[in-house]
Image 1 (cartoon, helix red, strand yellow):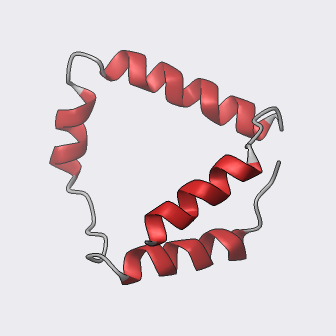
Image 2: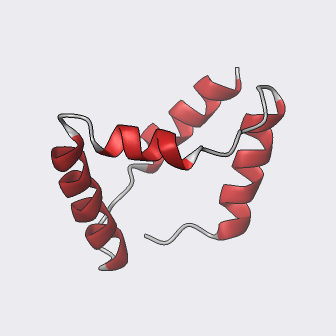
Length: 74
């Protein structure tokens, strides 16, 4: 399922408007996270998820998504 980018942008604007603005991540912080003990497993999970998304195999439960969006917006 492909989500239109305008939907993601609208959600990001709303989610970030009530909290702090996102800060850029320092490269050194990224390296520190990547070198942690579980980084290899996380990278494998992320790669598998990216592949499922690009292959169109990742399915989102729209009801769960809607409930979580509403919960996060207050």
